[in-house]
Image (cartoon, rainbow, N blue to C red; front, side, top):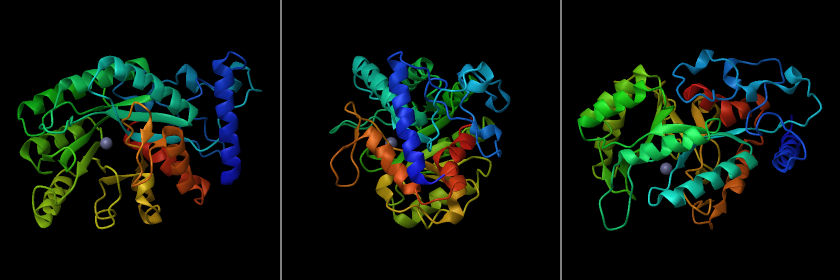
Length: 344
Ligand SMILES: [Zn+2]
């Protein structure tokens, strides 16, 4: 399908969601579930997330109501979303005020559905307030999980409410992952200039947590500036050791796909954002997921030096990056890779 057709279908599907919300018509599922593949090459990874938060083995789960196609229910005439679905793998809660966060989550989930985003990964590691050190809090995970319980079909909860240099965090992460509630770990602020965090990527505590991520088969999204708080050579060596010595752990580099790293490790993935410019080379398409890094009550995202862009427009800009790809590659980057990584 050419992109213009995809976009037209996407616009139509958005209209469908709006009309359905008004009770005028019914759409496929809740308007947020990707349709089954239409080219006959359907795989398990093309279906939506299991709505059960507690499912720790989602690969062989039964289809949910929202996965049942209209043809199964005899309602075959309704329009369905046939555009290019996106999975947003990078979003944050607002940690400062519970009411504000609740309203933000509600608004964000409405925007997510309107934008043709099938799922959104949510979490928060270091909370940064100017003039004070970063704060790590298990409350971040409580709020993330509460949001995921309210929107189980949309939110992929990411575990992150722990101090990456505290040995006690290993037990915490182990206990939490054992619940089966978590789809990923991250985004971890390891070396992060705005957050003022300087945790070595190969810190002994983190090495134990990477091993746990492999056991529970959840990816680890990390923010790592190799030259922040150390020299660049040492920072690069930290990353190399962490990724190499944990070959069964799937790592996702947040925010960008560094050309000097990607393609060098079979277990290193990257999150492409619209501010990165052009897509990376096609030889690493199997390792790319997409994200917005949304964390703003007004649902605006700064992109480079541009003014803040509304969430739906950011997602449209992501789609534009995929517009010239063939359908299989666009689907892979839009949803397919993330479905595999997040166990959907
Ligand atoms: Zn982020």
